[in-house]
Length: 503
Image (tube, rainbow, N blue to C red; front, side, top):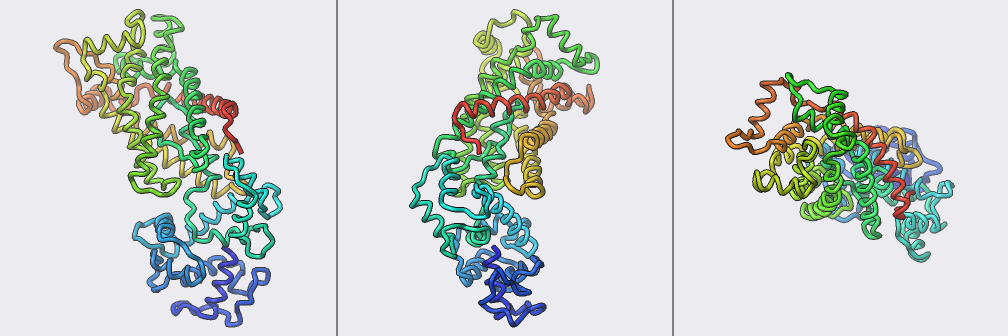
């Protein structure tokens, strides 16, 4: 950014915009070099320099930069961008959604953009000498699973190399990428996956993004396989807490108080130690179809909403992820009902999953497999939305404050962010999850009433108070940290076994 700003400020000093007059130096000309900056072209006052850039790009002088302003202004500076790229820039920085960037939005966009570019530059600079050569470009792309020839690497270098050294320094890198949309930084995407890695027993998270290279080389399915297997181990290890949560959601009340120790004692007395894992088989089996359907639906929805970029903005991710989650849940929902019924069954009630399914179908009909479907579907919105928003906020906060040499946050930061966002998502959607479980547990009894979602909400609040909507919350939260930790450790080990490159 610096070298283009230098040229731009020198030009601005010679031909200033009509609405900018203070603080100009008429002695500044095209001979100004970054090494010897004049007062306007490289002093410490970056805000001042950005103000000049803003005023040059604000072609019509209305205090806002629209797509047309960007197109005309950048062409004057010899920078050419497609209309789609310009639209992405405005969309990325336009916080108040008025179709243009005011000065504050413009500065925020450029600074955030530069931060990401520096992370990528440092990740490419393998020798840590402040320059990128063709060998480093080839190595970095090889790490992503893409092999290019030496000639192709030279072509990439030449497109950015201004001084003919066949290496790229930070100024050249920043200059080349000035005002180029950077919503999809592979370095950040690679290190900040969380819905694939962390499994807390719920599958309502927005799917992770994968880079174009990961999709092209088949790394995406290896990530999903590793994540699915890690989820199976994690769910199995925390299954006793999950079953206790289901029992407390269905059976606990003011008159039938069930504590954690009492719940475990009840399960062991009724069915022995093995009974602690009832329902876990179905909970593990449904991971594969749900993950596959959600991923495929997410990719299709991205195309339908007209996104040509590698990754989506946070709002688009929420919409696409929620819809994909709804499609996946609709496809495997009978498995959810079976999991709940198996978790609640008494010793000897069913001989297995198939026997349970036959029993439900014979006694209650096909509709029983979709009990609780509506609250489950509605619950996707607060869970996915809050989990995504909290995770992105924590991620961006860390990148802004602490990311200097790499976008890799390290295991503890990643675990903390994933655990916090998942916990917030679960807390927001828990009443809907409880109502869903109670509706799934309802067995058709001749002459017995079948409560609707709203009826069940009213009944719980009336008989148990608002606290009744959070029965089983303690064991649910108790399993979050061990579930996240176990799934991460298993995922990392499986990733290496499957040949997923970790940079």
